[in-house]
Image 1 (cartoon, rainbow, N blue to C red):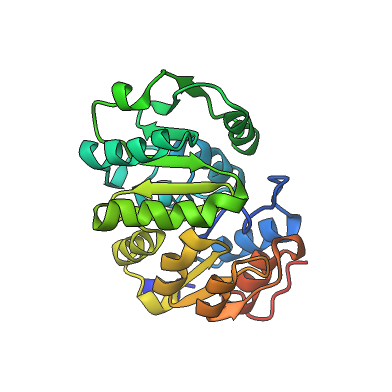
Image 2 (tube, rainbow, N blue to C red):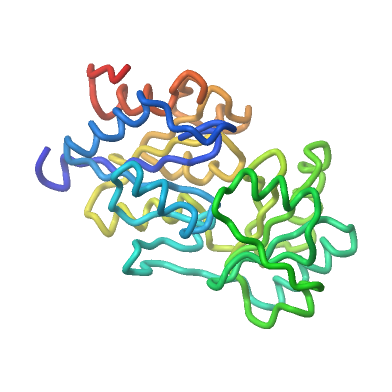
Length: 273
């Protein structure tokens, strides 16, 4: 396709959408993404992960468009930061006081890396889920932090995730965006940050109308992405809330749902299976 009016912008969440717990991208998903790019469409990844851990995945897929990372707090390519929003130091410390008072393992994300108070079983789980991440242990995070971070992440027992999400949202009010990105994770970012806001900014930058944006996700943090996209797709393994908001529900990640969505809305009758 030629011309911006013929192109689509496709934004794919990672965990639970692009791949499952095994972190393996299925061949059909790879073929669908490659076919969309070959047809002239733009493809980006929209994730809570850092740029450093997302870029290798993008490179593996042959993606060169700006990536939506840190829940939309950082949008960039290897050579250019297009958008970056950080928490204020005061709000970050309020969030840390909340987590420290409840002994909830917490990570702080700065441009220099990921920081935690000490090694715990939860940090080991996180590292297993995010190959290549090197966590630096610094003792008290409240004492360590001297600038506003990009993001905070709390690692939780899944049975407590929703309760902590509600409590922390109430605690921080409108001063931060608080989302659940996984059954184990609650994340805190600047209040204007979301995957949806980042999607619309990238679309405007590329001259692509909102109607030609496709967002695919599975969890609470994908709600703004699905709401903002011209076509919002929830995976078959998505939360009930996301499915209710979506324009269409794809098969699950185990059934190559992301590929099926791209085939249906972008590639027409082409089947990449």
